[in-house]
Length: 337
Image 1 (cartoon, rainbow, N blue to C red):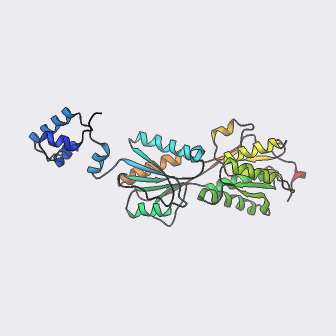
Image 2 (cartoon, rainbow, N blue to C red):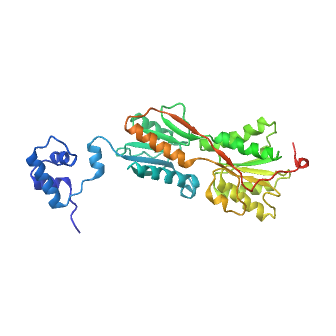
Image 3 (tube, one colour):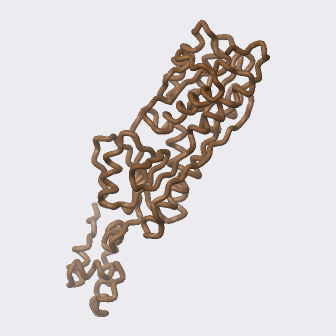
């Protein structure tokens, strides 16, 4: 097995200190020409390849960022998780930045010694980790959460307004009995979509029917249970709004299994604009959230923070209703107040 060559081997062969080798590697002008030549010759003879991370740390900076993603069931199967990783990876590649991916739990202590900046893909239970990063003055950006009480750059999506737009669209189609499958209460995005649903009903003076609200966790398993519960109710809903496309697609599957049709018997609308929603049994009406744009803004802002060229900012990106075939207007006589 070939011997791993390190900086000590180069220093020994060149007859200089490790500090001198480090200064040569980092192109310092303080090394005498004779010693500089000896070090370069030793590097060439030993085929030594300097560690990029070590070079960056020696210069007092790192071009590596940490992407911190909360650990939860199905993270690598979720559209959000995969799209965030893809978006951040694409822009990091263009900026010649490296990524360390942390799939973390709140109790874990993050190793922040080798990174120049951090992106939190979301913050719900990771508040202490975020506060520690800020305490250490590490350039930090938070995605998909708008945190007003901390001096940290945030890039979020207007999930509440997106949900309001979805419910208003169903209302304009004549629906009044609109059931809702939520994403739970862990994330700010999930909470905001629920608040949007409730706000839209309140604005239209539609009474909230508690039995029409079933809480899921973004998984298809929870959506199946929620859809079955909604369809079993004595008072039938004419539409279902789901907090994600995955849950909406699972709801459609359950509806079809029950011998019903979408949208003829019941309308369904999702949230995400996952590309697979176009190719399901019924092209899904949904709310598009600009995940790629959010990821790209996050990396660019972090890059500027790392360079000392930006101030803390708060960004809120609009969501957009995308109309396809899974929703249908109902006759005036079918409305129930």
